[in-house]
Length: 320
Image (tube, rainbow, N blue to C red; front, side, top):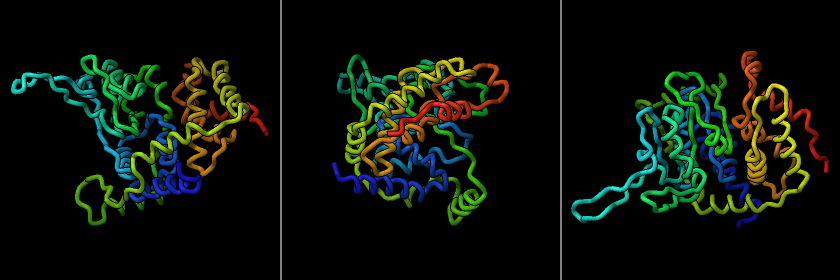
């Protein structure tokens, strides 16, 4: 693998290139890049029209990766996601027609609009990086990442994601409205000499090959980490299981997600060592979808992020 400076430069180049198409949202871009380097999947929550599809397309272009999008609907079948086997009359043989999951970056749009059976079709791909068709295991291309979106406002006609599936997302990333200055830039950029609403990633340049992303992932996974930092992550996760106002805490996957993401964050930040601050930095996106607040807290309008921030304030981070 390249030296530390080269890796930092690659990460910075990816962020810069994405920003040529996506105005603002720097924290969201960084979190998605961290998830990619941690070989994780991302659940993106935000109202429509905030550039989620554009962001994924821009990320795919930076490493010349393949991009697919599935619009999840109530009548979507599992075979529409994974593909199916057809009998070809001409050749008198069965042929595999691969579904849109066979790509590098898969955007699963409004994933909670499809029934559980179709949602679960993504489970094997996300966990095993392969699809089984007619008893034959077929690997998906590498690097591989699923970015799923869900709408926080329109609840009518939606199916909640099962906990088993939520747990398989490394991060839940929240996309907020742009600020005043960013919105001005956005409107100027979109309406200047451009026809219609076509997504434009023409200003995004390819800066790395897919193999380099895989190499970055392998490097992040191999970084050594002090046992005290691991214990700190576990303390945070275990605190969610007994914290007042939380009815369901995070399982062991929460601690695994914290460590994987902390390693990737260190790589993005240009370091080959992990600090407790790395764990702190990614706690909200790594755990906000793994805990369930009590009905009383939800009635009071308390957000899960506020509860996690309270936990971070109370858990002592290791000093050395």
